[in-house]
Image (cartoon, rainbow, N blue to C red; front, side):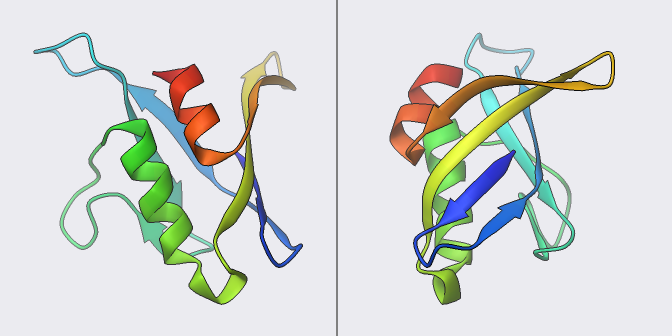
Length: 96
């Protein structure tokens, strides 16, 4: 996942969808060791509704004025394939 912040800087993190066994709802997990962020800190890695998770992740970066755009990629045979791109709400809707 590549994010562009509202201050013009960018950042990379790992994001992956998770589908709980008890429902068909897709959830999102973000793991960003460089940004000292992961869903579930400080206990264990968890997943959340994609919009809620992306919003929390954006709020984590207040020094950068939050996230302007997100681009999600899939890695296929070592190559990045763009899955979706846009604002937090748009991306959350597309991956849900």
